[in-house]
Image 1 (tube, rainbow, N blue to C red):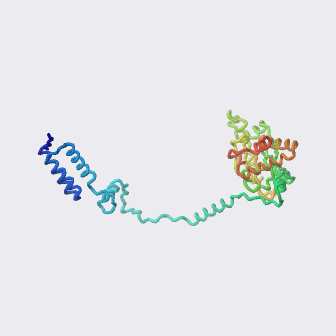
Image 2 (tube, rainbow, N blue to C red):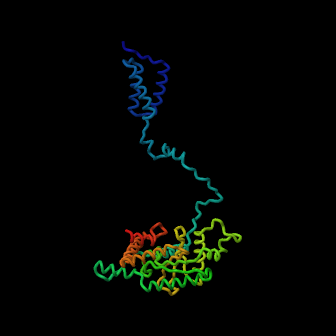
Length: 351
């Protein structure tokens, strides 16, 4: 026997009202057709009640979610667009404008032409300080002849040793008043007059002030003492730094004329980089030097080079070539974590 579905009068009334309202909203032929099919199924018997329920569910879903025009809803034309309404609802509101203090038409302050000139001048100054790596011009022909010519330019010549002695004399006069017992030594790891690139980063002249710790404590007592007593945290490393600062103040004064460039207090030997200007008459161009107090690294580097030079005369030339190669490629700046001059000497000797 075929099962007969008899919907209740209340259900038919609810469906008829619901479909009538939806049909009024939806003027599409598909909506009207599905609505007619559902009404026929509700009024006439069906072999399978599941078909009736599936049609009713699909009709309700279509009318509720898919019956309206998606393209029209997505369109941003017209004031009644749903997208515009949502955006207007969540858009940040502008603060109310004060009629007495309306700033809408207040002109923005114009930049001063002097400031622009100053910035342009600073940029020109910064660009002019950059020293590019210029290839060295060699007159010799052939590999061996070019190497020998290059070694002749970067080697330590008698002019280099004379320059080192002049710088030592200048430094000694500058610190004589502060530490009369001090001994000043100078070391040259290359020819500073042939440096073109990274000359300030890797100085070729090292000046070391040598003095006993007791002498430094006595002469610099006013700088570190607290009520006439030495602080408990004051050790040899801090004494070195204090002595370097005190000597730097003396050397950069108007009486001596050296220029301060940078400090490097984080390494094993605290030191500062000073500039010897050409105005002092020691050299034709300004050169950079490293100044330290009781440092042992420059002395060790000089000792290694002297001993190896006695064993094999080619050692010094090889060390100079390797160090020049590393410096021109920017990998010999000890302040950035690169190998020091002494470390490059050991690298060449042992490897």
